[in-house]
Length: 324
Ligand SMILES: C[S@@+](CC[C@H](N)C(=O)[O-])C[C@H]1O[C@@H](n2cnc3c(N)ncnc32)[C@H](O)[C@@H]1O
Image 1: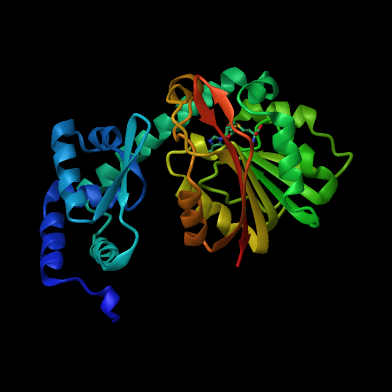
Image 2: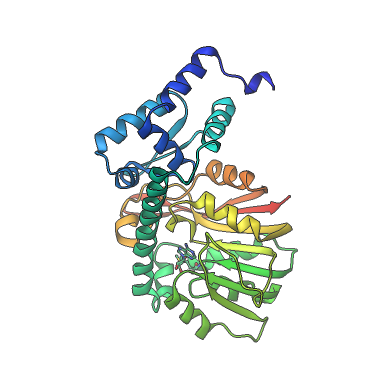
């Protein structure tokens, strides 16, 4: 074992003390699966917010978890570097997940996720028909599309997967450069607009209802491996983008490319209440650490000129990555 994998006596003691309490161990079990807010954790554990916050503070002070504010919400996650992180994972790997308490926590976590997905679904149900217009509201669409097409200029692709395809615009955009395309989306209304709109004239296209967290695609659809994956303005609707990206990496071909388009980190809190966003954009650092964690190498970042909305900047970012 390297010296870097070791903890000082005091740190090891602090780590073990912090983890050795029932609620805190449950919190660690949950945070090992997902980044979560205090409000999510309060709902799942059924304990008061001050109590949960106290436990979270203790785990933060011991360097086991970290907090990151994002607008009015604060997310918590396991620290994912250093000896302490190995120790936490090691401790958790010995937990029997069939334990009655953990099973209940797990079910409540899934309930929280379902409720969040339902909120986004309700929004897209209501906006499916007008989505092609809604999309233009906060972003300079032509400039974004031009930049997306220009970012891997010399490459054509065999199998294109567009994740969260919505009404299928990104499939249309890449159709002249791919042999075939598959769009997946969780929302049937968005997909029915896509089905009506997408023509088979340029390349064979299929759209399927599927969840980004589970891309176990049936054998009659394209793939199973995709050399181009696009995810356009989808990740900010997800409660766990890192988990989603690990599933997308699983169906990405060796040397395959990702083009991910989303907002840079921003402060427009109303995007949550009015447009069902969960995350207020992403930093390059966050995105790149997720890429590396699932075997994708970041190769390029492009930022478009920011739009000014309610006095705050909203910047569309294109992140390109390649599978090792
Ligand atoms: C903002 S729209 C973007 C649609 C399209 N990519 C575009 O840019 O026009 C986000 C899409 O992500 C889909 N979505 C949200 N959560 C999803 C999930 N868990 N799995 C698959 N699709 C999801 C929504 O149904 C919606 O169609």
